[in-house]
Image (cartoon, rainbow, N blue to C red; front, side):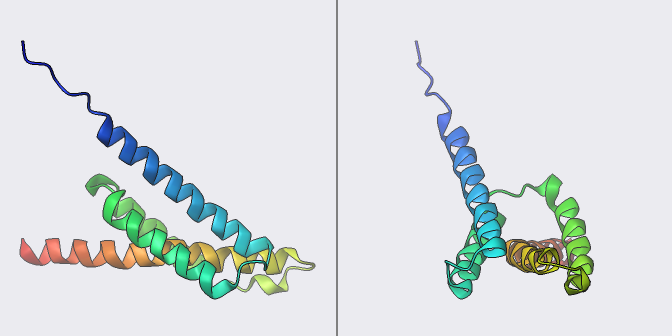
Length: 121
């Protein structure tokens, strides 16, 4: 009788990508509310996480929804949140900035991949 190996590898990879996405969101929140990590290091780590997630985690059927959401984020990022009184405006501005760095590198990679697929067809 042939014994089949358990397929835990895909599940482990999925859990790793979930943990990586949560680390990215945590770094976005840290950048939003604190300054104890230098912003250049924080943005660099967030962008690296975005690239890794773009290559490994976003599936073909999620691609168009992701690109539409990235367009919506681009439109929202052009708003001026500094007019909101108190520190809420600063927090919203910082959150959109850091979240944009979590989405933008993945958007670039996926948009180029989609354009390449369209041009090949």
